[in-house]
Length: 65
Image 1 (cartoon, rainbow, N blue to C red):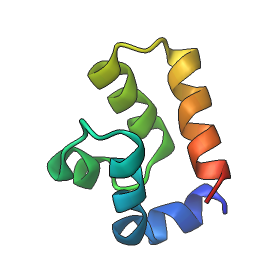
Image 2: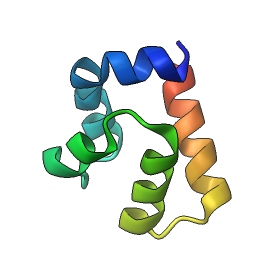
Image 3: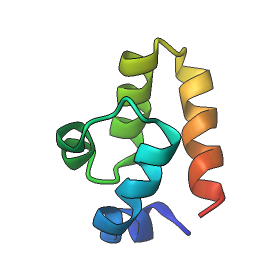
Image 4: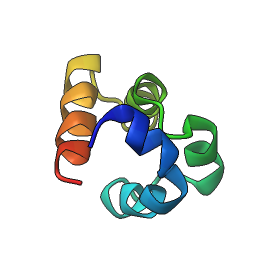
């Protein structure tokens, strides 16, 4: 699934994101709206990850969809 598809199906997929990153709120995920860079930034901020680690987590997560 590519990022355009993810953005288009975000309402369906954000539940899976909550399963992976339980501390994320619906409001935060609504603001992200499936955008890769915003999701990476949110993971960095919420979990204190480095950019590289957050990128890897996000890419691994969406690669499994």
